[in-house]
Length: 208
Image (cartoon, rainbow, N blue to C red):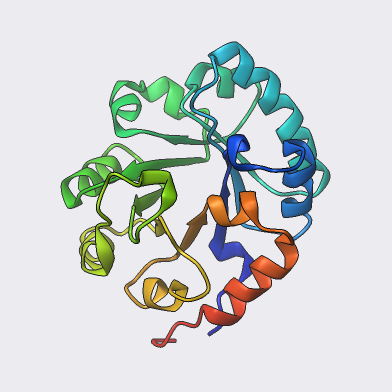
């Protein structure tokens, strides 16, 4: 089965964009990815909220989910029902806060992390980084064996992240990932529609 658009999550990094960031977001959501994860970890909470309002409006226009990142109170304030968190923040999240969200994702870097975030109520997991990526030049990739271990250790859907492109997406999906998270590829490509089409054509699950 060929990978669907709903298997592709876009993770933002406005510093990688050579064009206007909000224009880039609109071009990406026009291609109907599963969601936009508004990461932007360098911003203060106030700055993040200002940007989140704009990105959420774009996503709402195209009926694409916008997943906010890290700032739980801001997400609740803005009425966001999806959030992605580092494990350290997820651990401190209260049960009352969790009730505001239909989807809670978390980033995992070990099997123990994945098991813990699932117990803490995560509905999906991102695992990485799988392949070498310029975003983490100083850290060696964890590879496909790591991804397979994560996928076999949890029941929550796993999205692979890190250095994934049309050349290796097939191996990621067949290692057990539900889908992929793409950052630099979608932030830097010249044509978002063509880039996603190439991912879809290359991403075939051998076990379906």
